[in-house]
Length: 107
Image (tube, rainbow, N blue to C red; front, side, top):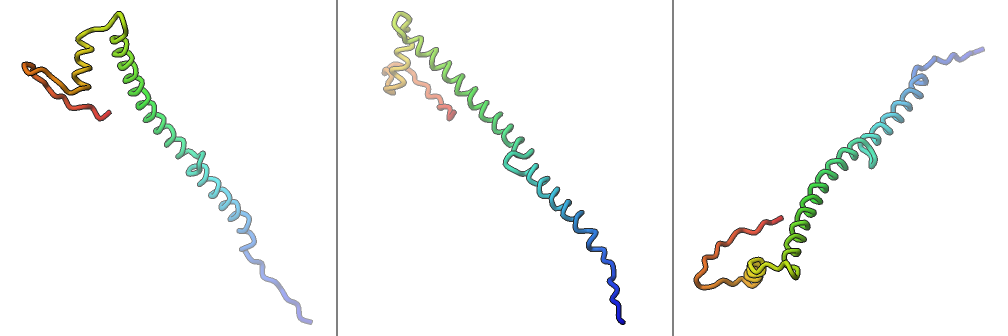
């Protein structure tokens, strides 16, 4: 009678640990690089700082414009301010005046 003896293989012992490593690697990768991961958090914080700076600049510009509009209201109208705005809008000056052209701010 012939009996077969099976040799014990070591590969069976590696299946569960390798699946666990693959599982942890997959979720670890997505915890760092995923849509809501750590790297995305840093990108969102940088974007928040950039947008806050833009918001502050726009807010300062609006306050300046509101102040200038307030100077043109009835009762507080300054003739110099009105004259300056009209000359700038129409691009006109008198013959005996010196005009200094300043570069416009791209902001």
